[in-house]
Image 1 (cartoon, rainbow, N blue to C red):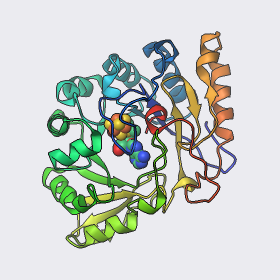
Image 2 (image 1 turned 45 degrees about the horizontal axis):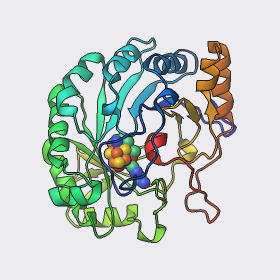
Image 3 (image 1 turned 135 degrees about the vertical axis):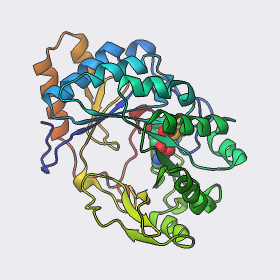
Length: 329
Ligand code: SAM
Ligand code: SF4
């Protein structure tokens, strides 16, 4: 098992399949100049499947989420999903994506064994989408969402980051739009993980503000069964339920005490936290011929050293060197 000194067990593995992306969301990447990982440094599809197999079979991982960068840009994605779906015990398999290209691949992904998707959508307005992502791909995202629902990758979840004076006025509109379509919406507080280090705590739209904006149009009550557990989102029933909305308040109400995650970057580094400043190199070990027992021991040791919390709100907080797009969000 992947335990740490605070008694937490990591059962949820986030695998980044690439650091590249076809959008340039302002809270994530600069317009240009970001250095990509070199191809030979990326784990191959076989190496990824080997490490996921180890995590599921020997280390107690029960859920695997593929992310990036943009995971749909990975040519071998469907094959990786199919191989992971054959593992015993069968892990839950999900994907976090910007939705571009999902219209083409949703059916194949479902057939390969993918269970669910989270699609990132920050705005309902085409121009605002361009302002936020620096690309004209809004319709592709909307098409991707519809295709995910049609393919049965449900419940379809939508992730939204609100930026002050850009899309923060859309909180209630986004919720109404998702409710109409049966999508589960979760707002994520903006975190200091952008490549250009432009995050400013004083400008961040807080969970409290998001809830205020939602309260103006909807009646929100804390979800009764929502013993929050390891789930990062605090959830509220909307107008009595059954539909709900989530807020992931990583900055103002961190959930580190219940964190059950472990992360593998596209170049084969284990990270015990999104905000970890150190990594453990499984790729080097794997390529120098390490056996499963040795790799498992490295992974266990990496997790054992996990800190109590990310402490984003602490004055001594240091942003990790790698941006979110290279860690896997
Ligand atoms: N490209 C995919 C996508 O956008 O869904 C997967 C990777 S992206 C890094 C994963 C999630 O992280 C997205 O929902 C995105 O909105 C969110 N994200 C990116 N940068 C963030 C930041 N600085 N703070 C909070 N969330 C962020
Ligand atoms: Fe790409 Fe996702 Fe980052 Fe946007 S948030 S730039 S879609 S990796």
